[in-house]
Structures are given as C-alpha cells and as structure tokens.
Length: 406
Image (cartoon, rainbow, N blue to C red; front, top):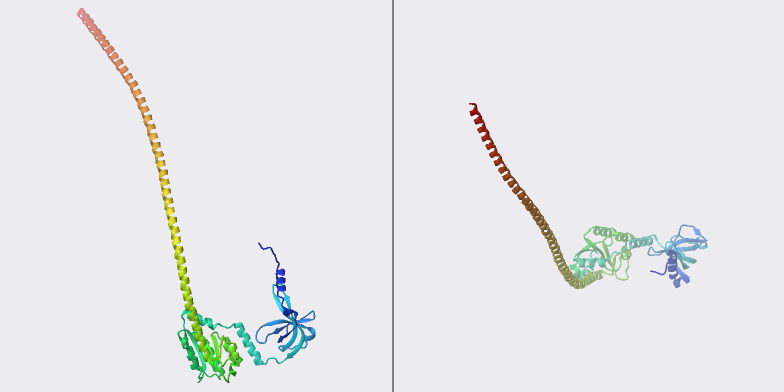
C-alpha cells in the first residue's frame, strides 16, 4: 500500500517546483514574430503571442502596458525578458515570456513571399514527413517491387550518374525516368499531380544537378503542390550547400542525383541484410519455439497418459465396486428368496400336517359312520325279519280266519 497520498494540487505543485532551470533566474534576449492577443489588460499587462520564424511554435508573451502601444502586429521584435511558469488547475504548466525592454522592431520582417514560404512549411509540418526508408524496408521484407518515378530535366546528363549507383537496387525497385521542362513551373506541378494520382507509384523523385537555375524550387506554389501530394516525395537537387524550399518540404532530401542512386542501393542492402539476419533469428526462434512446443506436447501427452491411466484405474475400481454391490444385492435378494421359500415350505408343511390331521379326524369320523351304518343295517335286517315274521303270522291268521268262515 502506498504511504503517500497526494491531491491534484499537490502533484501539480511538485512538478512545478521540480521544473526549475537556471534560465528562469536570468534575463534573456528573445526574438520572434509578434502577434496580438485578445486586447484585454490584466493588472497592467497584456497577454499576447510570440511566434517562431520557421515553425508553428509560439509562447505567451506578457507585455507591460507602457510597451504594448509601440508593438506592431506581425513584426519581428527583439527584446529582453525573463521566463515564469503558469500553473493551471487542469494539470498544465505553461511557460510565459515577461517582456522587460524592447530592443528592436522590424515592421517589414517578412515579405508576402516569405510569409507564403513559412505557411508552406507550417502546412507540411502539420501533415508530417513520410518515412521513405521504412517504405523501402517494408518492400524488401514483403518481397514487393516499388514503382519509383524520377523527374529529370530535359537533356540532363545526371541520369547516368543516378543509374550507375542505382543498378543494385533494381530487384526491389522499378524506376521510371520522366523528362520534364524544369523551367516550366506549371509543367512540374502537372507532373507531380499526375504521378501522385497513379496508385502504382510509391516514390516520386525530383532530380537535377546543382548550379544556377534553382530559383524555381523556392517557389511557394510549387512547394505547396509538392507538400500536398500523398506519394512519398524525394528531392535530389543541387549539391549540399544548395537548400531550397522544395527540399525542405521533401520527405527525404538527397544532395544530388548520384547520391540518390546510392541512397536506394544502401537502403535495399541494409534492408536485405536485416531481413537475412531477421530470417536467421526467426529460424532460431521458430526452432526454439518448436522445441518448446514439442517438449510441452510431450509433457501434455504424458499428463494425458497419466490421466487416462488414472481414469482407467478409477473405472475399474468403480466397476469392481459396482459388481461387489450388485453381488451383495444379489446375495441379499437370493437370501430373501431362500428365506421366503423356506418360510413357504414351513407354512406348507404346517398346512399339510394340519390337513393330514384333519384327514385323520375325517377318517375316524368315516370309520364311525361306517360302524354306525353297519349297526343300522343290522337293525334294519332285524326289523325286516320281524316285520316279515309278523306279516307271515298275520297272513296265517287271516288265512285261518277265512278258512273258519267258510
């Protein structure tokens, strides 16, 4: 757990105190382009702007009321000042120039053409500079051939200088040389726009030797057109001391035509070497990765085998347990059946014994009935004999009576 708890204001003040430089304690001489602010005065001071000559960098300029009346908009001024910091509640710390004394002021600091050139540089700075070296490197890595269009002046002898130093790069670059009248600004602008619209063109080069006649490349209109194109733009104009506006807005600035050919060759060689090294590193990495993956797969297979063996063992144990339970269940069921059968047998035996006893009793009764029947039959025989005898006697008496009557 952190022991120090800070609020936003504490953090801002910490950084504000940490950003302390010796220059803040000194009076310095400053120069730039003066721009007025909103015109409001705060405690006797105006808050205006001081812009850099060649870029969009600008600072807040704190001007005393007594000096502001003498300052002219868009003039080049030189003055003494000291630097302070202004802390804002949103976490920003800005630097403020505090004007002390106006040394010089040039109301015609920039001509209209110079202002136009600065505007072109500001536009290009906002758009950003494209990385030609990275484009070439990507084409080598991807095995893709770039289409490079080189604009040369009519009848210029520097083409051969370029081609002599470029030949090695032909494997990765398809160069098209287009001749144009470099003294005709409209023709140059048309060529730039024409090849920028060609989606196959990856790099557009403007190439010529040094010497006189470079003024056209300082044209703000030509530079504005070149700054607005979406194709990677290279200049190889003149020699090292000759730096024009067009060169300053180029994505890559090369000294001369021969150096352009050397530049392409060097970039292709470096990218190829890096690719070969990368391939070797990649192969080694793949090899190591494969070895790691193979070892990991073996471990996984071993773990799976152990898991399967344990599972098989568990299944066998479960089956054995189930069989034991089933055997116990069957034994219990069989025992119940045996017990039931034995109970039924005992019950049947008891019933048979009872039936046997009943039959014995019935047999005794039958014997009694048979004895009684015999006795009854004997009684009936005696009764019949008596009856017959009586009948005979009655007949004899009647016969005698009848005979007597006669």
